[in-house]
Image (cartoon, rainbow, N blue to C red):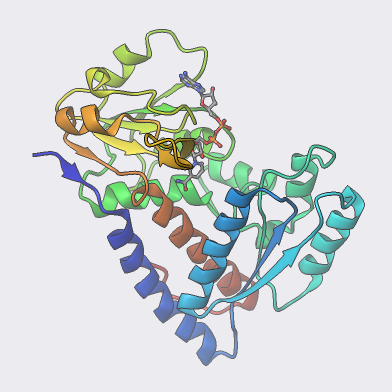
Length: 297
Ligand code: NAD
């Protein structure tokens, strides 16, 4: 019987433990603060930011939301980030991507104080991660590590195929999994849009992590019966009944669930862990900036 991995349950456990850390910080007069910046009309981006702010509220992190008109200049956005860098009540800064075309995404990521970079995308944090001294890990790949550990799957000695090589999921996932620690120690193959014979690679993997952003790219025929499947993809497709849209992953759930050993659903798999690890990074950033030790989960 294929296990359907419940991301909400694991994320809730982590959030409960983070609440204790928030209480420890409060005992030292510190309220962790997360600033989110949205510069887009995109409804999906708006939904993601709202979810993040709501999650902050749930565990006692002070959320501060900043909305800028999509026509705003890059200089103004950079000025806003600079002010947040200087604000001691703000421990974490998250600029919701994508930003409009006239703004260079990398410039923005590099403007954020690396100690407040709760997305873990600043080159300083990327470098620390690659060299095995991670500070603030990117939320989605870190969440996947926790999900694999919490479900008892583990990664030590496992053959893992990561499908996707983006800077936000695929590459940091690969870099985290090869680290010499309990959440890593895996043998990783990274596949991408130019990979030949993808099915051959996924069929031989113990764990497949699908982060291609291609609806239902991976089906049951590309998996073995022992494979654990982590579906990162969140793709909007037209609803089957012609009314609006629905969300599907990068894995064709119906055939994969017949074949694989375990699988994460979309929604309710990786997504909740991404948010939980954003809260984790905010608490960790506050603890580092305020010199208060907390017992992070
Ligand atoms: P991206 O578009 O930046 O990168 C996609 C990667 O997939 C690229 O590196 C590309 O080489 C590879 N790829 C594309 N087509 C492929 C194919 N046919 N075969 C093999 N590889 C292929 O996307 P991203 O930002 O990494 O996000 C990937 C998916 O994960 C998206 O659906 C996104 O919405 C989702 N996502 C979900 C969460 C979450 O919390 N659940 C977080 C981040 C991203």
